[in-house]
Amino acid sequence: MSRVKRFFRTYTPFTRSGMQELIAYRANFICFFLGEIISAFIMYFVWKAVFLSSDSDTFMGFTMEDMTVYLFIVFLTGYMTYSDGAFAVGEEIIDGSIAIRMIRPCSFEMCFLFKEIGNRIISIALIFVPMVLGVEVYRYAVTGEVRFNLMYFGFYIVSTVIAYMISFYFNVIYGFMAFFFKNLWGTSLIKETVVGFLSGGTIPLAFLPAGLATVLNFLPFASLAYTPVMIYMGMYSIGEIFGYMALQVFWLLVMMGLSKLVWHSAVKHLSIQGG
Image 1 (cartoon, rainbow, N blue to C red):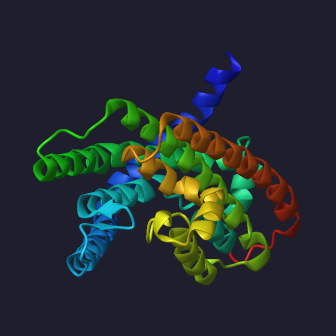
Image 2: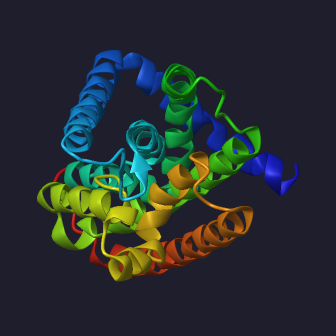
Image 3: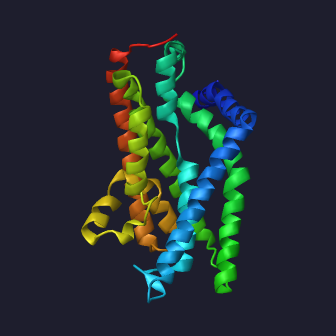
């Protein structure tokens, strides 16, 4: 059996497990999604009030149509690239199940990754496709023309996949901090808030002072949401798209390398609280 076949044979069951888990806990999935979509609508009405109070049809280069598309696509992108690796690692350290996972003959990170892929497969069918269709119907209703660009959408998909991988490894690295701090619940709230702002999930980075926006564009957090969304909206030229996607790949490689280094250091500090 080739190494590739052995690899997928080992980790495919984790994908099925992720799909079954999402289906089994439907109420949790629905409530979480509704909470997030309500937040997106709240931001929509906040920005609508901002535009109505403005003397211009544009604000920082964005029309209300642009802002609406940005809000819902950044919500969708953030949802699809979200990783709960940090929470999962922390919980396993608390209840002691981390010890069992560490002695299994499989990669610690790949187990979490393929499980989350199972979650994403369900989310694509139930959330991603309907929301993209909804956004495009809205754009057509407002402008009277089809704004959907298949090429830019393809770039958006690739960029979003890379963004998810960056998010996954970033959260795995953060999760490894539980080896040192034992519980990450409190700091996770701070992390989510900070990452939401730095990634453009709260407000577009273009709205920030030019110098700060330039710096944030080159940090890994912009690769999580802002870069894919701006690609979807056609705000970047082809050259800029390749440049920012190359930057995404760079940060992905950095995160992968850091996860290995932090893992080798973290396991030396394993101290199980439960189990």
